[in-house]
Length: 94
Image (cartoon, rainbow, N blue to C red; front, side, top):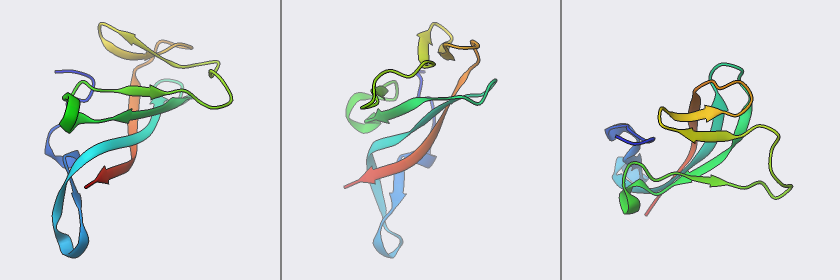
């Protein structure tokens, strides 16, 4: 099912006058559920590349001491091994 195995809630954004628009890009933060550490930012383009599309955005200041690690079970925290939660901050639509 992929990392972004969600259904309809994020596929459409509210436009002007309540119109629905397709979401072409999602941006947000990655956080560990176990230790609550910030693990970086992500960007995704599910309509163009499928539900499993996830790009980790490298910070300008360099790599973080803790980060998300891809495993067979999904994304995990490099510090404690906890599951990673994606918090969507922006939905960009056309």
